[in-house]
Amino acid sequence: MKLLNYRILLKQEPEGGYTVTVPSLPGCVTYGDSVPEAIEMAKEAIALYLESLIAHGEEIPTEEKTLEYTLMVEAYA
Image 1 (cartoon, rainbow, N blue to C red):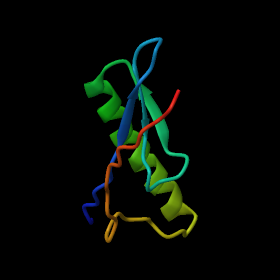
Image 2 (cartoon, rainbow, N blue to C red):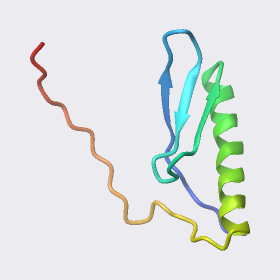
Image 3 (cartoon, one colour):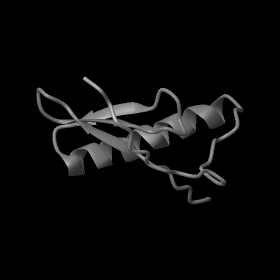
């Protein structure tokens, strides 16, 4: 078994809870009522996503050689 790292993004929703996306796994989205629950749901979603890729003989994406940077830009309203 190989350990893989994936970044997750948690977005707080206006109605409550958190939507989680996994940028390196397109379409891998889940939700949790709290941050800890959202993280646990993300672990499960990632595991199921990878399981499906393996079952279909598809390549497993990794975040190796991925750089992350946050940009600040001005927005005129």
